[in-house]
Length: 160
View 1: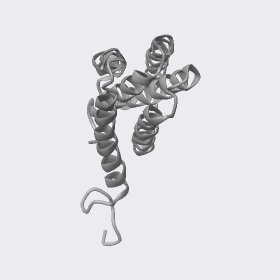
View 2: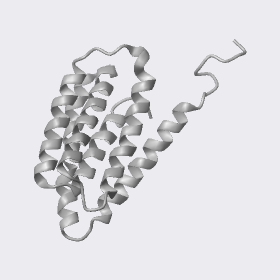
View 3: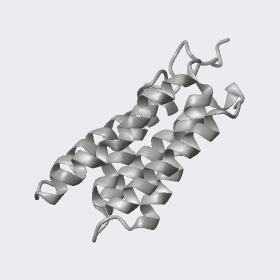
View 4: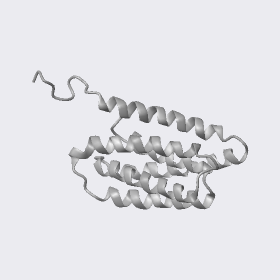
């Protein structure tokens, strides 16, 4: 779960789906922030030993971003932009650690998932983006908590 394009894709889609509950202006500003910050951070060479910390931060960010969809009264523009900045930083960090940072180009369009999400929300089907976000939270939670458990054979133990 902590390899390849999946963490970046889930985080980008999570930001987009959370933006289903923001204003159209806030959503576009958030997506712009996500793209700019992700491209900037991806250009920074992060040390490889930060990998587990970056994955943990990214999974926690997915959970926090998904929670924004459940804010009463919708998602204010300031929170939407903050979600884009935060998502962009973690997506960029994941891309920086990836052996193929160009994968970033494939996942950034997932942030545009706010377009069908807002369409569904405007027609009284706000439950659909929330259900998908809850599935994403389940995947992120499992990935985060499984990464905390030492797996025999993957980390040195007291027997070595």
